[in-house]
Structure formats: structure tokens, C-alpha cells
Amino acid sequence: LSLADKLNLNKFEVDEGEPHILINNELCKSCGPKSCLLVCPAGLYSEQNGEIIVEWAGCLECGTCRAVCDKKAIDWKYPRGGFGIIFRQG
Ligand code: SF4
Image 1 (cartoon, rainbow, N blue to C red):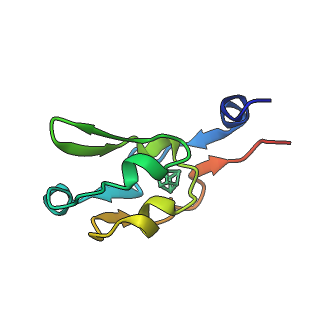
Image 2 (tube, protein in one colour; image 1 turned 90 degrees about the vertical axis):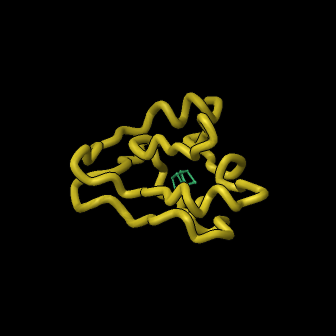
């Protein structure tokens, strides 16, 4: 299986009422490398109209984006109990 195929096996219980990743775009404006755009293994970060967007519902909960953010602009916590990713890679 390709990586994309393996990722497609995962299931997500999306907590629509409480995003577990929030971005402080005021802090992002002064960020040079914008490492979050490069490191997310699921490719969930993008920049649109000068703002950083994260499609948090597909998060693999690896924590990499939080670890690499120089500006501490990412407010990250695990999803509430019963929500988040359910790994199904065999
Ligand atoms: Fe992507 Fe990992 Fe951050 Fe989730 S925790 S958004 S998978 S880098």
C-alpha cells in the first residue's frame, strides 16, 4: 500500500464542537519559515490569503506542527475522549 492508501484506512471521529488545533495568525505574520506548511505528514496546513489554515479534522495527532512552530502560534491539544483518529493500518 502507498502512504496515501494507508492514510485512507484511518477513521476519524470529528469533534465539530471543539477543534483541537487553533492557529494564532497574528503570530504567524511574523514567522519566516512557516515550518507547519512543510512538516505535517497529512498535509493539513495551507496558506490562504496570507493566513495559515489547518484542516484539523484529518489530524494524525503526531504533534509535529506544535513542536516545530517557532512562534508558539499553534494551540494544540489532544481531541476530547471518544474523538480523533482511529488508526486502522492493520
Ligand atoms: Fe499534521 Fe501532526 Fe500537526 Fe496533526 S499533529 S496537524 S498530523 S503535523
